[in-house]
Image (cartoon, rainbow, N blue to C red; front, side, top):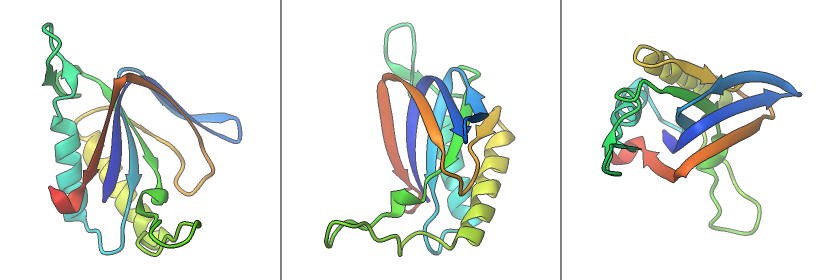
Amino acid sequence: MRAIVQRVKASWVLVDGEEVGRIGTGLNVLLGVGRGDTQEDADKLADKILNLRVFEDEKGKFNYSVLDVKGSVLVVSQFTLYANLRKGRRPSFEEAEDPKKAQELYNYFVEVMSKSVPVSTGRFGASMEVHIVNWGPATFFLDSKEL
């Protein structure tokens, strides 16, 4: 699994003009599921994200996690994190998981995260308008295969 994690002051998702998810201070997680990913990948990635020390202390050092600051997480599915751009000009998505299995793992990831922090989501498979008020900016890339 791959994730783009952004520290945010606020983030929300619209589908067809309707707001389907919103958070204040916390993390926006753009989540991609790759072929062969498992619940173990979701567990490792969720644990890493929940405990990332990306919020500043009183001295301006990254010392606090989303758990420490009592923040929230917005999880948005993004299969394009598995785009292969090596050949040509059009991305190939062969490395992305089948949508049915990807949705199962996405839902599992959200469930795992929800046990520790408030979680909002986008709508899996929908065309979404994602609003991100990135704080810093602070943006991080994680791959469960590298954890």
